[in-house]
Length: 435
Image (cartoon, rainbow, N blue to C red; front, side):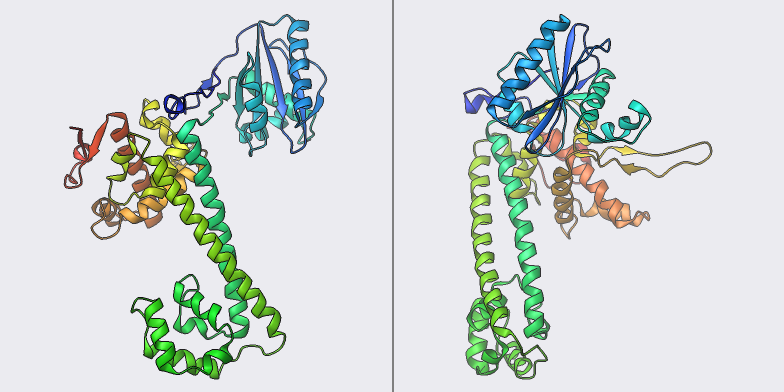
């Protein structure tokens, strides 16, 4: 049971303590203070191992509210004669972080419980599916008593910075995708034939034409030589006069709508400006990721693996922290939710699946990295081919590649070794001792 507290020295704290440890038992003489976290108001509850407890109480997400919670906790510690305090909460969303940062300077141990455990324990508590703010902190306390809590992982230094950068990038990539979907709908209304020539609206050529001309009427008035030259420059030779001629012909005969076009044109121009801003900001984030990775010693070893780029490595370190903190590969598999399970009974043997009870973003990063590595001449191409050749489904084979990749990364960092691309016949020879 330990709260990992950042130090003032950024270099010393950069990779420190990024691993949650299960709390198997709670010592006698411990006050269990639990919190049901809310956006504006939280519900607190104090109890002991032998069942003595208080009524649930409310406190706000303000300095005064946090001080009220701490005063109530100390008062109940004195009331029940407890030697130490353990604070527990359900690990959902970011709303608990301000409280954690407030408590990290107190003499307290902080733990979290899995939301799935709370959901299952809720009905056991009083044989009812009832959910209230007063009941939830009591359920959290019961889970802690049973020893199903984890210590808090507080990312520090560069690892914390990379996690925030990665979360920001994920959010803005999602917003970029949403904007592209909106743009596609609007372009379809006025010029549904546009995508027969330019397949995707994410490309620079498509966005340039929509920004410069917008309407099919303007495109239809151009000569194929003029439009072809513009398309050739923007696409670096991918498109030319032939595509320009096709686009002009389609623009003149378009079946797009003719009413209310002014509002659609304004919307398209605004979306294009937003897309440009998103692209610039995502580029800034990725540049900052690269600069941060230069301060992390083992990042160069991960970047040496063909198929892992700056974004992937930054995401991995942001989600995991220091891989060497995990003594076994099964621990890091569980963190990623890539640990295997099956449901078998009697003569029926269930199919093995991944638990998906770890960090979802970490699984996503590994999955997309696996896709890059199974391409022709990729480092996992032969392994993937062997799996699919034995009849394994492609999706399952990709998951197997993700698991193998995570094992290799863990071994490289743990043993301070370099990746060697030419040794692909044996997993044990994929790494060598660093010079």
